[in-house]
Length: 262
Image (cartoon, rainbow, N blue to C red; front, side, top):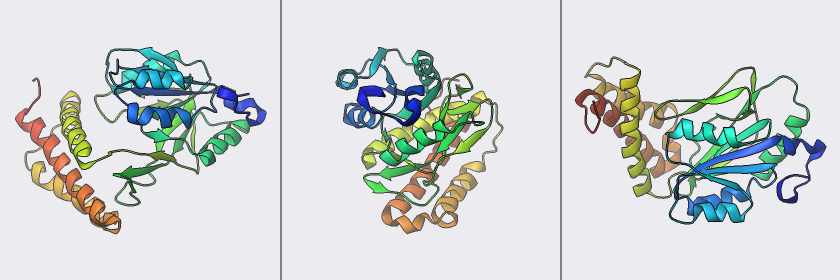
């Protein structure tokens, strides 16, 4: 018998711990936790939310821990350290596990022999629209992995799981309801551009000033034309233009130390 009564084939769902980090995610956390109640446990590491996030998650049966901010990767690793299951499914608060993906995880782990982790595709939604092109789908991300074989690589932004062992791919995607509005998108673009500039600095990457012109242009061409983002209509154009601006902004901030403490 799984978490909150979901009965799973061969009890393999009892091997899965779902981990989530949060900060003021009251608009997301309920649906995220509810989509994962088949797991043996749900661990939420919350950054002292002020909008009731922790209370919502706890009411739905999640184990909630309060933790100050340590950066994306370290925060997720803290959540993993608090989980008890041998398999970790790491979710963001704006992600949802579909019934098809749940059943595929169950069947896959029932027959698991060699893989230590699995990439899962994501259906990314922008302002409610599923973005099918421009590199936004299938957007495979390593989300499911054995606890003792995987860890988030600690970096400033765009954290990712590194697994010691072979990895496979699952067929059915997560649903990812990212960016609820244009203002939400632009706010996070501002934040991520600063973090990305810090990441470039930390890695001591050399970057010529002329990249301020060519990298944004390539980003736009790649998303809008090569990856046929134009098929997503106005949203595709907006995203390609915005990512070009993001590319410009992070290299501008790196070169001219805009908003960086160095």
